[in-house]
Length: 259
Image (tube, rainbow, N blue to C red; front, side):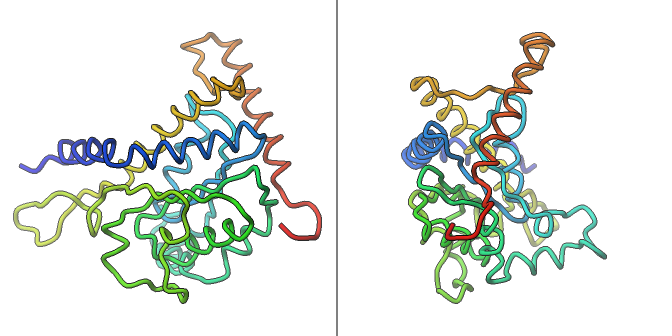
């Protein structure tokens, strides 16, 4: 019998070794942005929305990471009909959309960009990276190198997401993502890239916290009342939300002019 769990854990264990340097480099960039009163913009389309939500907000997380999630490219539960999967998959390939998303934000030297895309081939993630680089931001990309190199680039630039990143973290997922062969089926089942992306996100989140704590720049951490009591938990939640709002307001573009 195929075991998704054993296979997936093996992939993550190999990733922990092979991507250690890239993860450390990404954590250093993120910590620098947060300590310098900036934000780490985090972006993904499709199922790459999930690591964006994992990084903030949830228990054990903290402000400084700025989720950028477009519902038009990530709302999958209706599958067909209005808001269906066909539309979402089409939209994430639309050239020029990334510029419209970025037009809402001030991209400052203290900020950075973290983009998740397993294939690294769609226009919107690629152009988000291109826009961030043009504005002078360091770019981190989490992608599957096997997946992205298995197909020809489809962006007019002839490039992939990884081509526009200062740091590339290889998610280690195979071509097609699924990792288990089932007798009687001629195709594999059980995708793994979300699992590896979540592992990467939490490894970086913990390392960034270490770096920020060393600098005395750690924001409030959202923490369960079962750990710290109701009053302290409320204080941490409120502090995290207010800090997130403060950073978000500073990152929004509120006047005409260059980003």
